[in-house]
Amino acid sequence: MAIASQTSIEREDAPRSPKETLPTMYDLPSEDPEEPGLPDEFHDLQPQLLSRTLQLLNHSRNNCFTASDLNLYYDVSHPFWYKRPDWFLVLRVPRLYEGKDLRRSYVVWQEGQNPYVVVEFLSPGTEREDLGRFVSETPGVPEDVTAEERQQPPGKWEVYEQYLRVPHYIVYSRYTQQLRYFQLEGGVYQEKPIHAENPRIWLADLEVGLGIWEGTFEDVPSCWLRWCDAEGNWLLTDTERERSQKEQLQAQLHQAARNLLATGMEASQVARILGLPEERVREIAD
Image (cartoon, rainbow, N blue to C red; front, side, top):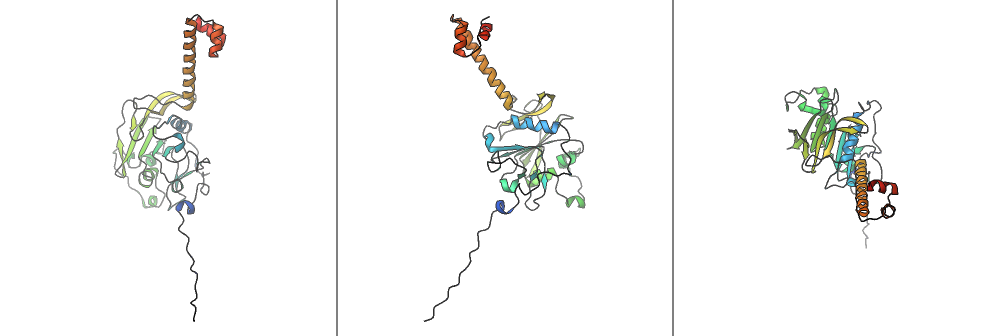
């Protein structure tokens, strides 16, 4: 009786995901030595103010990521192509990369989420890339593109509109205090009107506004972009919130001291109860 031989069949492993096979932020360069640095100090301070005043009702700070001047890798077909937005916001990603590390760059095929808001600050010579087809005096008229340009990586406008499909794209010139807002509709950017009063721009899906605030940030007086609520009230930075809370607590303690003193209680006893210096209680009494 012949016994049929059994041949083993090797099972192929399941295809690996792009997150496992494509470069991560640890593999891609985080800077280009030949690329010039920030054009001015404004490009350093303004993004800080945007990040520190951003408060979203439906998104926790630990589930959002904001960055400025960070390499943004956007195309799996050309993994070394990147842009460096002046400021951008990503929703539904952890503040830290994989919850444990500061980002060296932002790699969309690893993170799984594209930027939701991008802000660019115009500098001399950057208008063409920042404003795309809207750079001409007649909005919406595309400029001619040479064959040589077609072989180069796309400009910021094309990347934000066609590759990343960023819903909200905002451009601001501190030289003219001109603010322009482009919203993605039907796959292309449409310019939206800017209101005369704050909020100049209202992002309804994020329930937050953006306006131009004239004030001092980090000891520098200027006209800054700043987030606000629907009534145009400026959202506070972390340090401003802390200072405001301390001021409110002091005001409450002082009012409590006045109330106790009004009952005829001695200043020394009020000071012990409220934990205030007796000299301060006597000043309140006067």
